[in-house]
Length: 392
Image 1 (cartoon, rainbow, N blue to C red):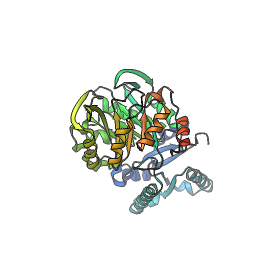
Image 2: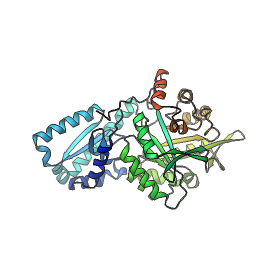
Image 3: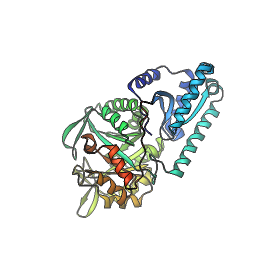
Image 4: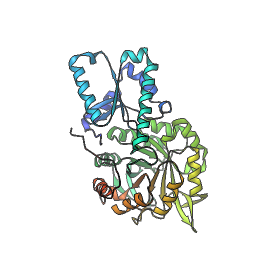
């Protein structure tokens, strides 16, 4: 399903975020702390033609807080119609009266927690397209490298060329049926955190698919700012290599499901070695051992890029990806080398990874996501079905 919203709905949601009720303020004080429920909520979030008071994508959960106006027959009827519509999209809707939040907050929080747990159990049974290793549906993930507010693309971060506005591209990919997005901010400035936070806020207002943000995250405060701005997950690379304990700290502070470890690998004399700075600086860490350590410390997902393949459009490094995927118990995202639809077919069939990521083939229209998913389905590879409800 695709939960796209038009521009007017998005602007209305933005205005409502600045006018919360007292009950909403109280509840948001708990929902905004992702480590309590182990998942991420968004406030006044647009879904198709509606605006949800609170929305959790990973749990497929909408929470509505109702004042006395909702007792009026005409408003109550609209609430019923809206709930039926949201449920037709596969979302779970739970409602609370203001009085429940004021007088029975503990019961409210327990009910929310129970619904999240039920969602997690259901995902384990049927295979979640967004979370967890071995989900039935494979994910297609466009990656956007962002420099000074623009999407850029080169080979190994060299010879960068402009690829468009990141928010516009994100909206377009959301409508095409991308399953997730990854943003890597490569801006070289002391204002990096502020720039990233503004980007995250803009993206969160415009899309309803999960997205990960990476680049320049060196401490808990960096991650906290980005997650609070609306990112679903954060990605760290060189900071984790230099300070592996940062993985433990992030997992403890936010939960493993929010922590993606990006690994750039290059083959040196027959060994896959972890590299930094876009593959230009070799470390002493063997990639296989580093990924196992990252998992043991609390990584929730591995984004593995073969720098030997990156930008070549010659195909993914399926052999090494399979080695890693067979060894870990968390999702693996394949990156580096996508140049054709067949390359995606190959990495799913040969390496059985959970997701495949690419950049330029999507940015420049060489591969359209709906066409890619059609081919994957024809090969018996399950992918998320998209039905555009923006105009429903």
